[in-house]
Length: 132
Picture 1: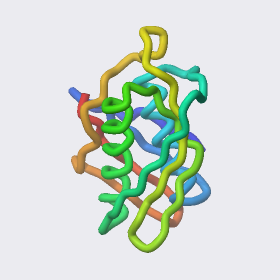
Picture 2: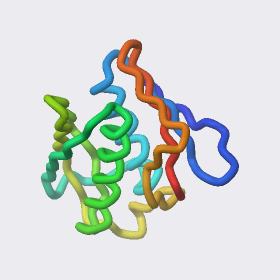
Picture 3: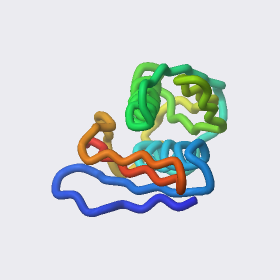
Picture 4: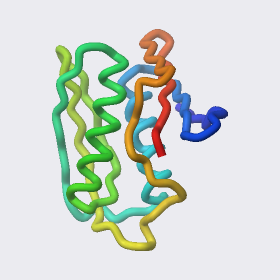
């Protein structure tokens, strides 16, 4: 389930695809987090969250923005272990490590946006723009 960077003049644009919408969301989430915090983190703290959404597009942006928010508020580099979608609610479970200089990746993501967003379930494909 790959994630590819697409051309964009000022921000980061990503395309992810996979076997299911849920697994594609998981891959996309962790790709974004690796960009921000680097590849290696130690699973020191368990985390989880639940977000209500109205459409597949809002599911993508709200999930990614929740991960950005949680990482900033807790000062943890996060990895998502599991994503569950059920009746307009997305739940994620993961782990985090206290942020240090060695954890930082190459960019700082401010937010996932609705700019040219695509969220397709069959076949599973997501395109999203990250404001950096």
